[in-house]
Amino acid sequence: MERIEAKSRGRVKTAVYIIIRLITAAVLGYSAARGQWENAVTCLMTLGLLMIPSLLERKMHIGLPAVMEILMISFVFAANILGEIQAFYQKIPMLDTALHAVNGFICAGVGFGLINILNCDRRVKLSLSPLFVVLFSFCFSMTAGTVWEFFEFGMDVFFGKDMQKDAVVTAIRSHLPAEDGGMFIAENIKNTAVNGQGLGVDGYLDIGLYDTMKDLLVNFAGAVVFNTLGFVYLKGRKRHTGFIKNFIPEKLNGS
Image 1: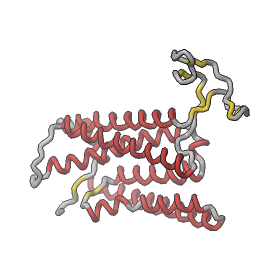
Image 2 (image 1 turned 30 degrees about the vertical axis):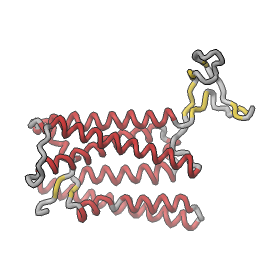
Image 3 (image 1 turned 90 degrees about the horizontal axis):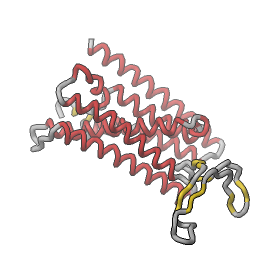
Image 4 (image 1 turned 120 degrees about the vertical axis):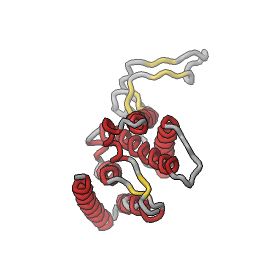
C-alpha cells in the first residue's frame, strides 16, 4: 500500500515539475520577447531554484519526501511567477502572508531533517533530545526567514524595488517630532503628504516595517506548528503525527 502511495505521489510530483517548468519557460520567453528583462531574470532565478531538490539528492545524498518537494516547488512558483511577475500580491493581499507561513513550516522541516539525520548517524557523536532537535529546527526556520527579510530590504534600498510592501496605518506614536521630549501621538490619520502633495492613501504610509514584522510573525507561527508536531513525533507518538514524515528530509539509503 505504501509503495503504491509513493508511486502515486512521485507521478504527481513529476507532473507538477513539468507543468511549472513549462509555464516558467513560457513566461521567460514572453518576457524576453517584450524586453522585460527584470521578469526574465526572475524566471531564470525560479528555474534555478527548482533545481535545488535534485542537487540536494545528488550532492548531499538527502532525499525530500514527494509531498514536501511538491510544496516547495509550488511555493517557489507562487512567490516568483505569480506573486512578483503577475502581481498576485496586490490582487490577493493574503497571498504574501500565507507564503511566509508556509516558508516557516518548510524551513522548519528542512532544519528538523538535517539535525535529525546527524542525530541518528552512528558515525557522528551527537545525541540530542527531542527538545533540542525542535529548538534547532525552530532557530533554523527563523534564521532563514530573517535572511530573506534582509534580502528584501537590500533589494529595496540598492535596486529601487518594493519587496517590503508598504502598509497604511491610521495612528503612529513617536518621540522624534515631540519638542519637549515626550511621546508624540497622532490618531485618526486621514492622509499622508509628501513634499506637500497628498498621496490619497487614507492614512499614514508605513514604509515596510509592518510588512517585515508580519512576515516574521507568520514565519514564527509556521515554525511553531511544525515543531510542535515534530516534538510529538519524536516522543514516539507517530500514530497521531505520522503525516509529518511527509515534510522531513531523510538520508538516502546507501549513502
